[in-house]
Image 1 (tube, helix red, strand yellow):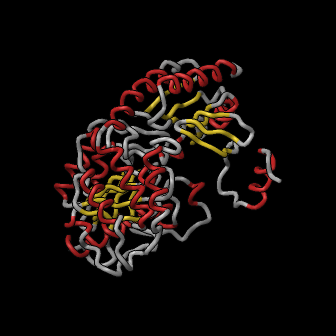
Image 2: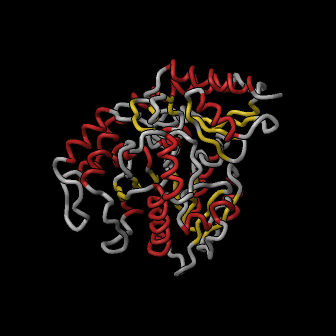
Image 3: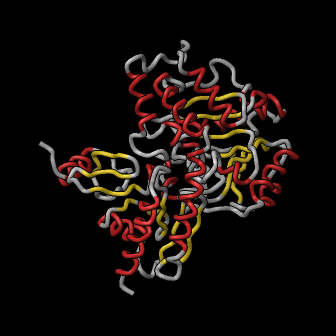
Length: 404
């Protein structure tokens, strides 16, 4: 019988592919912003599954939607219609201010789908010559780990030994709109960027960056594709981070929180003049738009339609950002972020990000490191004021214990 953390870890280490290096915490239950390990210890979840659990573990409305649909039907494929897809795509299109939705499953699938749509639009609408379409991306990007997506990544850990790589992309410095304009030529069909770079360490671009990208792409007849898979759906105190910047892209790429932390749900959202280039048989997914996913996705959209989640993330985010910034000069070099999303650079002379994450776990707070000494905070929007204060207090305590 398996009943200890060590037992579970031994099985996973022996039989699960080693494509992750998780903290040695074995979670068995979750409620709201907290999770419980098999040993009975409780932890404040300040990662929220990379923003997939924006609305907390076991949100009653989302669980209810999933359970109700489980008793009815879960999968039909898109070979037939189902009674959940129409309401879901209608609500999501309305939330985004667009008129068409392409439902998929994972975030990487949404990005791959957006790339296909952009290329087809380039050939069929813009008139780019066959097989010449180019898409501009940003240095430091993270859009997923499929073969195509790592082809334009700067992360050698994700790229090494996985070539040959997919052509058709050019990368320019993030936050530099002039570099984007200089890279555009007659074959450019789209600019694909994250409004905030997540995996890079919560990198927030200059305030004028996204408006400039929107102006340039409009003027140059190039699609603006915003990967809001991590930044969207309430995380930054708005429905989309693009809202905070006052811009509307041609395509939104959504995922993670769209499935409510229950199952993978993703989507490309845009208008018919772009998404309408797809015809039957040209793209698809057996599970994309399945009734279970659509039912949960609709419940997620309904949570966001009131604006309460976005406002809560904004207010709690101010508390989180203020608390973390108070630690600058006390083991913290820099804090970046918007809303309930923050990247904290630990002084590398004191500790690695991994070491700080392990120490925080011992104190009941779960976060994740990236790029050496950066740790990321992304607590669920349902966290309380006390939860936020607890997270900051534990980081302060960990930093105080580090050898000078």
